[in-house]
Image (cartoon, rainbow, N blue to C red; front, top):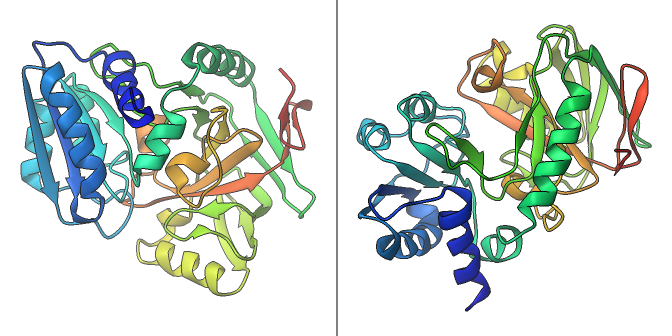
Length: 317
């Protein structure tokens, strides 16, 4: 069996546990139709009915899909979102999850990424995710430092960390594929300090130059780093102040993920963390805005309530 065939089979049978009597919806767009077709062809012999819906590419991550797509998601047992821009933080995805659909969000997925990152040791990722959540849940404060100058602190008091380990056989389950992260929403208004993003970021991809971001009272208030920093500032500015909210803290735990410039994979890579700006309403936060931009930080040192969790990218668990 080819690597791509084995990887897709894992996604259907292990990750979403698709059954013969179920209906599967694959949502894609014009720019990512190749991946959508591969998933659709794989679904046909594994379920009762498979549907492929193609839509125009969204302008940014978090923008709602067409009403027809949202309606179809509500009526499906399992949904694969093989789109260019992420639908993870949309109302359409949240409503479909509430209706019981099991959903894998795969923004920007490529055939190479499928082959490399889907057929992994999910048991190990689940174990690592469980241990990290145990440390984070009930904690009060996170501090992050890097050799490039990141010095950021924020509260996580009352917020719950969630593991995204790819296995969702239950109604309403939601995951990224590739999976492999633990994430939470920092308490709004508490982040302060400086963040240096040196891996990749949202719609920009791999960074040629690190972006330095000044953060105060929970919002990014200034950026330096040349053209890419200006581009990020412009992307966020379209959506107003809420798009500058420090929305997410995440830790990558997928051993086969690499930093390629595709955030879907980058945020799962070992030895990285990510900080996102914008919407966090789908995972315990209070900010709702149609924008979510993740920034990847390489080799960070992280402390939870003063106890070191990561040392230059290496987990101490």
